[in-house]
Image 1 (cartoon, helix red, strand yellow):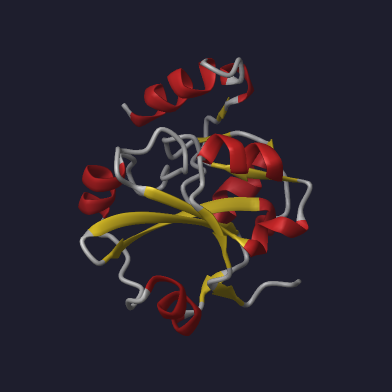
Image 2 (image 1 turned 120 degrees about the vertical axis):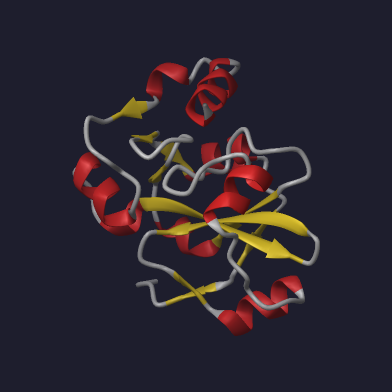
Length: 157
């Protein structure tokens, strides 16, 4: 199970005890915000895409939406989200629990600048009922992000 991979990953940093698991679903931004009792924009949603022949992940603020022209300028291709089956197979996490940690080899993680306006954010941890609170520096470190990108719109800056 994906959450077990994420727990093992965070255990190497002594952070596994910080993972929160809920009795309710946190599979969407709205459900996660309700479970965590925080503003939806502080949820760090991780979106999975096919960029050419490889899967990539983009973590963005909960209120941000992909801007197709910015995405194409950044990645050189149209934004094509992975199907639920592809996300689990290629990225290593099922939709609803996709996160930027313990991903399959060869999957690049990017962080969108929409996250930088917060001190801490809440990404999922590999299941549809989990999250962890991380500072932006911790998110950058633990995600092993390849780069910060600006591929979103529609959020309050």
